[in-house]
Length: 327
Image (cartoon, rainbow, N blue to C red; front, side, top):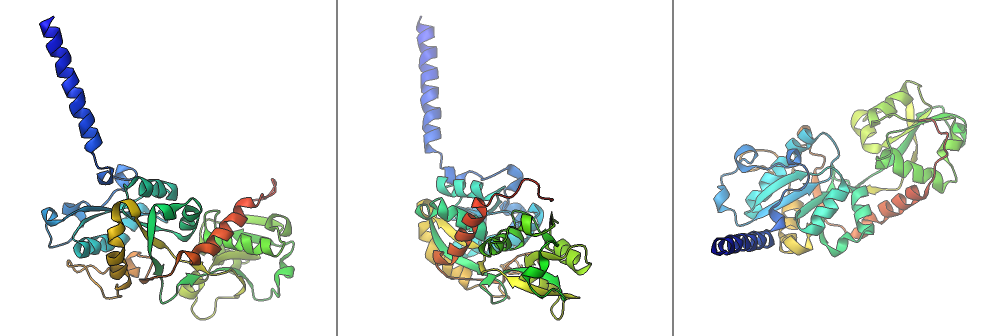
C-alpha cells in the first residue's frame, strides 16, 4: 500500500510539473505553418555580426504566399536579416500556406509582424483584424503607391461593345488584377463576362494572357499594368489598353497589438527609411528586384486605401457565375 501511495504521488507531481510547463509556454516562440515553410535559422541564413545570444527577443515575421516558397525566402530573407540588426531581435521569416493561416497566427500571438497582400488584408479587415493588429506601412513600387488591372485588346478593337460574342482570358480566380478587379469592372457596367463573351478562359499567368492576345488566340484579356510597362515599355506589339480598373494598393505591413505593439513606431521608421542602396551588414541588398523582392520601398497610408479592395472583394463574392462557362 505504501508503495502504491508513493507511485500515485510521483505521477501526481509529474502531472503538475507538465501542466505548469504547458501554461508557461509562450506561443509566440512557436513556428507558424509547416516546418519547411519556416525560415530564418541564424546559423544558416542570417548574415549578421550580432551573435544569437545578443538578441533581446524573438520576432516572427509572417508573409502571405504569392509564389514559389524558395524564391520568396531568398527575396525576403535580406529584409528579415536587416530587421534583426535594427531591432536587435532574432527575426524569423515565415511563409505561410494561406492568408487565413497568417490571420489566425497573428491573433494567437505567434506572428508578431505580418505582410499581407492587398486582397488578403482587405479580407482580414472585414474579419476585424484591426482589433488584433496595428497598421505600420504599405509597400511601394518604383514610386507608385498603386497598380491597376487592365483589359488588353488588339489595336483594331474600338470599344467594349466590339467584344460582345468574342473570347476573353483571365489569369486565375485568385488574381486581383487578372480576375477580381476586371470582373468587378465588368459587373459595374452590367456585363456578365460568362454571358457577354463567347468563351472565357483562365490561362494561369499574366504572360500567358498577354501573349494569347498578341498572337490572336483570344480577343481580349485581363492583366496588370506593371507587366505591360516592364515588358513592353514602348509600344506593345499590336495591342492596346482598352479599360483600366480602379487603383489597387500594394501589400500592408502590420504588427500584433498583443505581442509587438511597441515595435510599430520603430518598424515604420525602418521600413520607410529603406533605400535602393540599403544593405545588411553582410552586404546583401534589401530592396532587390533582381532577386525577386517585389517592392522598391514603403510608405505610410491609412487603412482607408484598402476600402476599394474590400468593396471589390464583396462584389466578386456576391457574383454567381453561370454553370456552363468554359474555363
